[in-house]
Amino acid sequence: MNEFLPLKRAVEATQIPSGHAVTLPEGTIVSITQALGGVYTVHASTGGLYRIGSQDADALGMEPVAQAQVADGPFSEELVWAALREVYDPEIPVNIVDLGLIYDMKAEEVAGQEGALKVTVQMTLTAPGCGMGPSLAADARQRISVLPGVADADVQLVWDPPWGPERISPEGRLKLGID
Image (cartoon, one colour):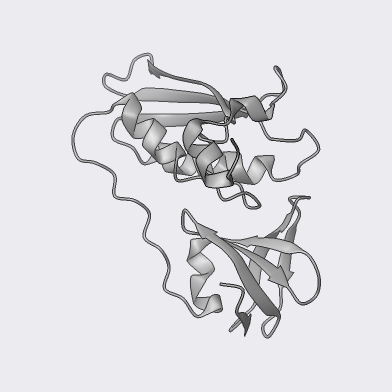
């Protein structure tokens, strides 16, 4: 990575860490700093970091990354956790589960809809002032909503208890080189 390349067309991007939506013009020189979960973090020549979705991979001269195949068969909580492990912090190369950002997940039947489930996830961010929360929550919501049996996905940002590095999983610590 870190190769400099011009955008082949204008793209909608999310500014990191503010979370503001911006349009990066065609020809903007970018360097890909992270490509995980089908989402790209780029450093733009205009300054700053931006998150570009898989649907705009062609602007980077790449093929869109297909989302992980949803398993056939019945719903399981393991499928939800696997889907959440495909959502990455745009600045840290660790998924939101291993970063310890997921506080709670539950699945409940939707009243009056046999076999339909509502999945509710409570997640936090590494810093309350980070504007990327809505973007990460939307990514998680979208990935959960396509799972078998899921009729509704609700991803809530919470701040209590505050996140701390002790919440990082052993896998996340290994990836980050933390003892």
